[in-house]
Length: 393
Image (cartoon, rainbow, N blue to C red; front, top):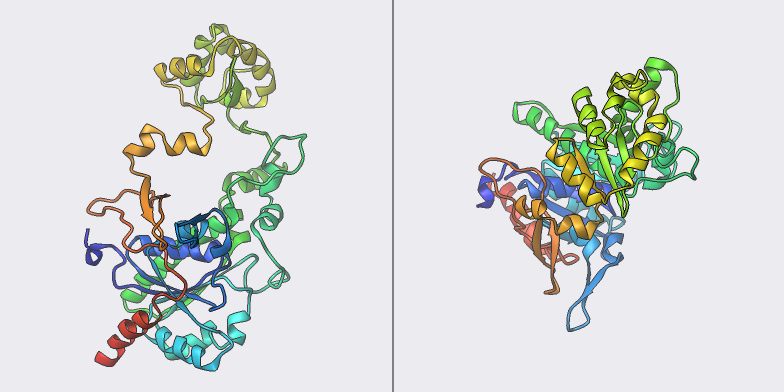
């Protein structure tokens, strides 16, 4: 598929991104065709470049696969943000770009002459997105933030793990990645506005706000009932059976979210009479009495293997799943069918794999058009290409 036919072809992005949230937002835009130029410090670049696993070629040259996962389809330039000449060079690029994404601490780029006010003076159509832990204003604006601290602050950790267990964070850095998703979505919304004749603008996206945003069911539970949502392990506060069960050999998950599916589960374990039990007649009652339900179902499930139950429940149309680890799911036949794993060649020549942009779209086939870049490998190229457009105009 040609680059010119990609949805975001022609959109130019300067990414002042570090580690995860900013680079993930940039990667979403890059995968859909935007020309994303990553601005990095000359002495080492994005800190994630040093994160393992570090894949080594036969010359001893290493490249981070963590970095590669968030920075394919981008180009890299270097700049010393404290050097007035480099700042002027970046202002020249900002004059001809469409979007800036940054996830420095609030106020840092303003002090360096690269904040929204400074860039909008040279380009009033620029869309400038700042990603931070707690937003650019307010009592917590200057507070340091990493994914785990924002998971804790947001309430997410209070509903993760077992009710009587120690605090547990989500195994995936959802604070970083949810902020990246919200940022990319909002950037595209503002891009539509600019293309319709509107002006650019400033986007303030916080990890805290993003995690509160995706917790709509938990926040509405509190608003509606005044009750504090609790950690329930794999269970659900409003559905049952909707949790992990232990078979004779392994755990598996069942999600019987309506009366018909509940009837199939009860029949499968040889307890059809449970559908007439007053404790389990409605979805609401099943959720309230799910501990009693667990005590009845678990002994039955422990009599057969997980594979047996998964086949039996699949046959009955009941949503169910093994609890896969990443090697299992990444080598799964359905993941292969969806082409969610793709080959990737690192700049040092090492052949590896990466995950694809996960959403299918008609008339678009995802591809890795550019490998993750070596530090500063596009300094001259970007300067020549981007500023050529300004000279022509």
